Image (cartoon, rainbow, N blue to C red; front, top):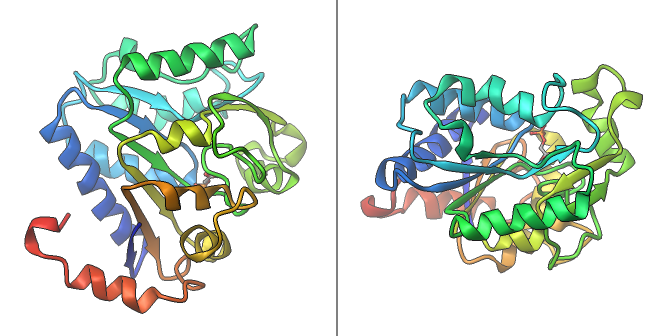
Length: 256
Ligand code: PGA
């Protein structure tokens, strides 16, 4: 796992955007796994500013709330159109986001997995992390072998996401999310986490035991993970000086 600690979230987000831009420039028909949440807003703003060519890309989003229509202002469909898709030249048919209104949710989930496979898998998967260690909406105790499916949010996540809905009672309790098994099959996982409230989950993910109680710790099994942190989210890492040293020593060819 490569840990990149920057003085600010802005600085870390800029470097992360260069990593994504490099993939888009080198592989115009790449398959991107996208994420939502406050952390991603600035990353998408940076990517939009780079005026990249999105015309041949295919995207798959991690998750969606069950019961919200694509037009609902808090749906992840709306988030993606507002923050990214309406600003770039992506083909609408190449955008995939789980359908929160699917009548047959298990069938829709299976179909989503089939589409990812048919697209030859994900070249990159962007990830945030929940304060409880969730990736996608794989809450604690999610199976590391899980695939796209329906999940129930924890009270912690409902409270964390209440800020987007105005109040906690408006946050849907169910979601469709790619599984941890799905995420682990992407060729490169890129996780961004900023702020003191993420420090505990980040420390568990990077330096803790691999446990379903911190779903992000499953990433320790993945051969290629890049984690972008600010000082606050890195503050509980025991080996942070080592990670900084490694980053400073990077040979030119490895620099992002
Ligand atoms: P956030 O969410 O970016 O809004 O903090 C991250 C997540 O829950 O994955």
